[in-house]
Length: 281
Image (cartoon, rainbow, N blue to C red; front, side):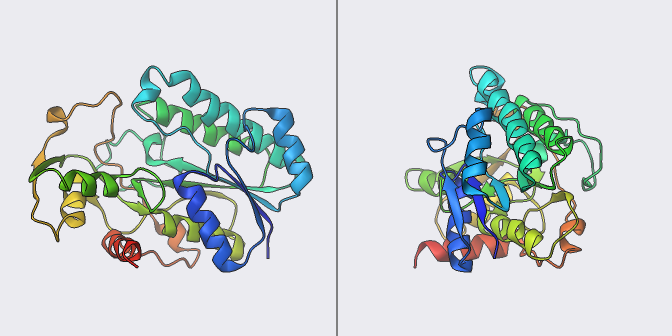
């Protein structure tokens, strides 16, 4: 059994981690942003000294991708870079393992094939730049770390694409969704399980990529979400649905390294169906 400290405990992944660790009967402390400001160096060091965790599960992040381009730019950097560096440096000082969650947005999305962990990063939006800088802070901290890049996250807790589509379907007979951005959806349950799996099998420290298996575009994802409804889902291009922040057109990440640890990854369709089924129990 390991004692974990969850940072960002009120978020989508943070709440999923709490539920999963309870199932495993792990001891853990769940800290929301009200409990711990990760940008406060003194507070972070003091909290680690108080709780004495064996691992920090860093689910804290600023994730408002479009706001990060302008009004949230400073906060995006402050949380995702400054806060991450403080956490990583404190973990190194206390000899505590750290698992940091990153994003496919560290890549520019111009690859036709899948991105490997060591492919060159080239983030094209402010959120991606901050998360890449956060990765670098973790790598240079001296801590024993796992960086886990993920993408298109959905789950029971918080706002995500699945709930957005379901809510729109209640008031619309027809929806339009972009079909020229391809990636891999990720269920928070799969991500939480993988994070703990890395610890359980003592996987080599370093950078991993984890999403559900197979890939799709947002239109295909939406069609699958709403397949049991009468809503007409139609494809459109990104030009027809402009957003402030650049979105990678093809950000499919290779999962071979994650699979090499012995972790079995459900397809995104399997994960989606399991997730939807869990909501009606």
